[in-house]
Amino acid sequence: MNHPLWLFGDQLGAHFHHGDREVVLIEAESALRRRPYHRQKLHLVLSGMRHLAAELGDRARLLRAPTYRAALAEYGRPVAVHEPGSHAAEDLVLALERDGLVAEVLPTPGFALSRKDFADWAQGRERFVLEEFYRDQRRRFQVLVDAGEPLGGRWNYDADNREPPPKGASRLPVEPPWWPEEDEIDERVRADLDALDLDTVGRDGPRLFPVTAAEAEAALEHFLRHRLAAFGPYEDAILSRDWAMAHSLLSVPLNLGLLHPLDVVRAAERRTGELPLSSVEGFIRQVLGWREYVWHLYWHFGREYVRNNAFRAPAPLPDWWAELDPDAVRAQCLKAALAGVRDRGWVHHIQRLMVLGNHGLQRGYHPAELSDWFTTSFVDGFPWVMPVNVVGMSQHADGGLMATKPYLSGGAYLNRMSDHCSGCCYDPRSRLGDRACPFTAGYWAWLHRNAAAVSGNHRMARAISGLRRLDDIEAVVDQESDREQF
Image 1: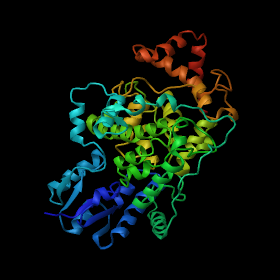
Image 2: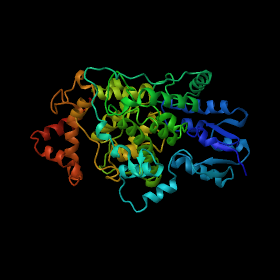
Image 3: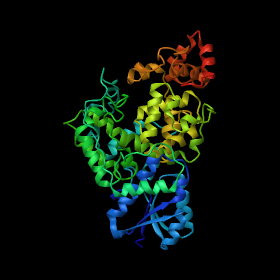
Image 4: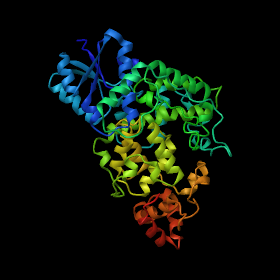
């Protein structure tokens, strides 16, 4: 039977609803109240669903109800649904299927590689290496390859894409990003969210990301035409006054299901020849490599993965962190990252990994709590996105299952890759005293605390050797154990 198709709020693109089935969209108040989401995240999801309902016209039914179950019971017809994006949503779908409200569960069309094909690739592997998966993806989908070999002779141009910000520049010399224009649907969403009085975090603000397929296509084209060339070399750099730099800002429309990843990859691939290969490859690696990898490992590792805590990090998130209060922080890099999350629910991947994640690792924040925080506080942080990124890569809490070393650094790295340190009250070269950088001192304190756990990792050998040469490490450890100001 051609059952009506129920779409979740992250399944909004044409590849999810092609054909002529009636489309059911549900705004469940219980889902909005489940956790303290970023206010702008809720706006994006509701706006996307309502814009799609408006586009589909009579073909769509937009239901508002206390729960998904209540909405489907009121609708009165069994529905089909695509595989959802979390273990909790999968449990819900299975329960609704047992009760006759869901008649059919379809494979998700939102990723290039199917879950079955990934399972075949992963069979027998005890450790997972992105580069192996990425090369398989390139060959499988014939992206930037010639007769099975990488275009340009190299699979990976990451070494070319680690430039610090240009000296003396406050902004990159690139076109500004594409920005959407809010409409009456956004106005209504904002009013409805105000009326619901939800427990949210972050500030409300103008909508910064696409919520329709047309907007997503416009944002993609603008990025490829005007910004991709500069993305590669500066993708790991941070500028205080240029939060977007040359990043694509496409994670939201991708994770809302508005863009198909292969369409994005093909569009970038077509720019080969006119743009630097290192930039094209670096962007494709994020979409066809890392994003697909994270999705599949979420399902492969299973629901217990987030409980991994290899370093036995015990600390709850401090209030200033959970409540997005950058005014409680003095370190400029940490202040700017928290302010970015507060103001727009988004900072780029190096601020996530080497500022926020690095701080969380050094201070022993519980990895599951940290993963939950990234999921709820970021506008692109859907449940499948964060466990592998945070628990695995950032916190190395899975014991090295999918990353070869902890992503840990002192202030020297942040000084090299950002312009934060020159205006900071802390000195990235100092590990003791009033001006001791919390990242530099925290780096050595963490190494001292976890030396035995990482001593067998050859990639940490140099760091452990440096630790043994410090004659003030006990004083550093004492100082950092008492630190309350960051």
